[in-house]
Length: 446
Ligand code: PLP
Image (tube, rainbow, N blue to C red; front, side, top):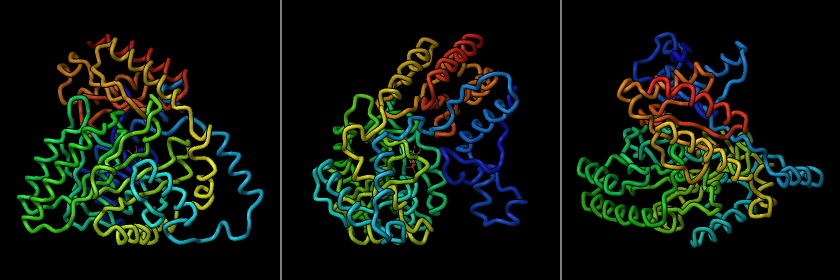
């Protein structure tokens, strides 16, 4: 049986660290580290992604044939040729001073370029001052949570959700609360409104609603109708909060690093045009395949209360969290690539891999909402498995698959046991091998 025992130093998708261990802190870690980090390194449930990745690494090291590793959301498509050409041109012919410190919000001309694109995308009068360049979407979320949330306040997120949110909230000393999604993984607006209404009645601790569309792990894309319904609900909740004397506005952080990876080639709808208290976050980790280069940005809605202060605070937090500014060369490449022909990876590859695996999973009795974007699937495990293994069905199946050299992540890591998260940002041979492993494992126990 493969060993997937929790280990220290767990993280996910290459990001910083894990959330506080539900089971308590290792005293040896607590002796030398801050209490917060010692608790995080103890390994929370989101540490499963790294745990499975480490198990895959151990399998590889032991030899014995290929390992079909679908555990990490590390984009497999190379950056477009246009981006490589842009970098070459920039380095070949540049005036002095291009690699120095800059204003913490980023190069003004790059922010102006981004602002014009986002203004057109959202139909809003977004200006340079509303844009802060960040160290990826993760960097944007880190600075925004620090800028907005006080200790003891809460962040509400629909489940299932990106496992790192636990850690991001913990580092901002915020409580992460979850609310359910619809069975098709769309927004459950009624549940969100009920949760926020109950919170308002209890004093209004929720400061941020964290939305992720297109979604990791489900591949769901919130459509304009549900976003408009959410905006109406947020309007009602805000009126209730104001009536109760709760004057801090509720802010939506819209985390959208997969927004240009819709399988049908369309652009993901946004809450920005519908709700004034929205801050949009995105990056080019996925659409340009630049996850290691750390380039992203945040866009403050021009209608946000305290708009200028929030943008200023985000730039300040860029500085004091030690990011200082987003990478200079990556910033300068964006205007030469974005919106140009060939200025994106071929999402068709991810879409094909999703379709191949989806067909195999459905054939094996998994229930699946086909992903509309990105490179993740989040199928529900067949009933027979769930009846046999109960609460542990996802861990049991992930472990059985590991023995067949196929690596996936149990749904518990994303706040929804009974499911698997399968990352298809891999090559064709890995998809084929994973399908064979699933066929070998699932019928044997069904
Ligand atoms: N948000 C979600 C939902 C993600 O899946 C990821 C990365 O996997 C991030 C944020 C962080 O992305 P970035 O590389 O832009 O920091």
